[in-house]
Amino acid sequence: MALQDDFNDAADDWFALTPDVFPAVPRPAGDGLVGVRAPVELPILDTPGFRERPDAVKAALLILSQSPTARKFAAIAIHEGYRINVDPPAISGAGAAFEAATFGSTDHANKRINLRGCDDPLRMAFILAHELTHVSQIVEGGLDMRVSTLHPLAAIRQLLAMEADARAHEFLFAVELSQCAAGDPGERLLFPQALDAAAESMGIAFGPRLIELAKPELAAGGAPQNWMKRVFKSFYATPGLRMHYENTILHGIETFEKENPGALKDPALFQGDMPPADLVARLGRHNLAYLANSEDFINFGDVRISGVSAGTQQQLAALEAIRHENPQTQGDASWRGAVYQLMLASTPKPRPPAP
Image (cartoon, rainbow, N blue to C red; front, top):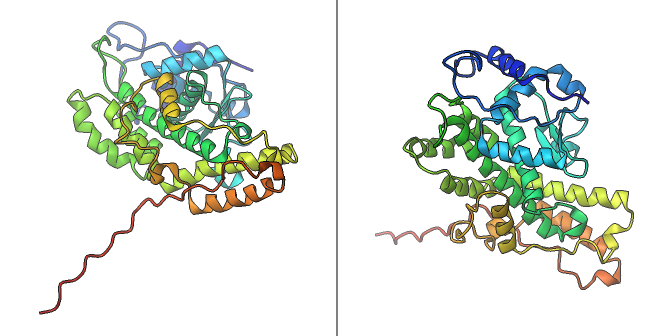
């Protein structure tokens, strides 16, 4: 295992890496400097993926370190013993079918932040920021995602909320990377492209439009919290993203059963719940309570948020049938939840009678 080299060298590496992509700023050495926060010393495993592009990975850490919230989350990860794992054999927790579309994941059992390497440090910085949000959710908010301890519908509800929150925090990271805050040096290392990068990272279906709407308000000094709520809600209107994370829970249950034959029929497993109010409180506990007092905006009782896809409902019904082969599970809460309908069908208005 190898940690990062001297971080001054890492900074020099970054400024020489992609001068045509990032803003031209002085190097962090000598007179008349921009303010550069020292990179966080989050350990990196010595993997072939890291050895293939060490400068880009170190540059991603340098970029990420300019966000106060990312530094806070990174400090939690360092304290808990997490390490960055570049290009592990498998990243997706939703199964092989989702591997190509997965760029990062957090292995909480082994304290690994899995990262698919690339030559774009800003892209990798946002992947790391997303995964560090999950570390904070678990360590500070107590949101443990062991599928065997939770009722499947509660597990899906929790994971979707965690993912929506991680994307909302990507918006916050982008604001902190692109704008000076109170107390910052007059000349600070900024990344104006961060908002546009976040637009793609948060979700192609809603990110670009939402970022364009937010830019004027942010430029006028607006706070990011209300926009974080909008990111959170927009995640739920994206079927492709929801399908990915619903499959993460389904794949986790199936994998657990393979590794522990008969677990599906164990009446002591798959029973835990987390009421929506507790879920929101735990999300607020790990960082910003931006979801507090927003029931009118984010209503976990709404089928469009609390429901699952029709395909997921069919798979849950099949798993529940196996579980019910044990008579002791017959009294369990049903695994058959509501199926969401993102676009409510409208009733055509009656045509006026012909003259």
